[in-house]
Image: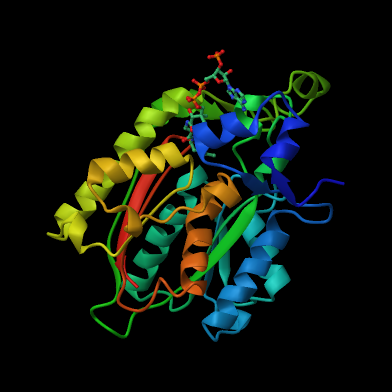
Length: 315
Ligand code: ACO
């Protein structure tokens, strides 16, 4: 049975790597892996229950559940409806959203549109991944990077005109699809003995080709959002980028000129949890008292697709 917390020392026993390489190239010291009996919907439901209790809501109050993930429990039905059933959220519509590491930013953007139109009042947005079930533990270039996790948020109309989502932006460029993908398991390469023998069901990534695009797109998004609101980076209290690599976070922060104490990073103990990374950061920030009403927050994301985006909000 796998261990829950996988340190870099533990990784050294799995593939030819070193704590020194992983720490200096990525900033990661440990990541969490789901254990037997845990999978995407169980992670997501636990995060959702926490979000509901903090928002003082019952599952029946939910109008919509958006589950951002690239790690569904199974191909059919969506993981969102499995979460709906586990929660007992009888009234809610539910669907999955596939945007890799940008999933939570995409999900919040979609949710904020439904709130703006007045169609829905209470929307649950979950970012969840169990990538440990998709990484190839013989491939040191990917298996050291990813961790499992979930985070959830309830989106409602703000009663205070000065608080809430100020601006959102989501973008994608499918020309980069071959740089980060899982070849098998879909309609193009259905599961077969050959696909399993050929390790086609695992993540393939050209990490160094993504590095520059990640930095550039997150920087551009941040600038566009700030320009749109006629704000500067100095107006931001907290910058929460997707946690892909500490060097990517540092490079984006440096280009934007955001002071280091405003940049949140937890990659050292989470690894890259893809769609779960930003909501896990938000949870840690709320728990530690750093994210309080009135905080001006900038989030940016980048992931497979490639997809990217950002949200500027006043908490
Ligand atoms: N341990 C030891 N050595 C390693 C490891 C490892 N775990 N992994 C790679 N190496 C070696 C390589 O084999 C290579 O050796 P060589 O020079 O002898 O050929 C050397 O280290 C350098 O490899 P690079 O890939 O060039 O290393 P780089 O500095 O680019 O770091 C990394 C790799 C961490 C993947 C980085 O490129 C990165 O973070 N890229 C961005 C990833 C990203 O943003 N992904 C998108 C989000 S994920 C999502 O959407 C699900």
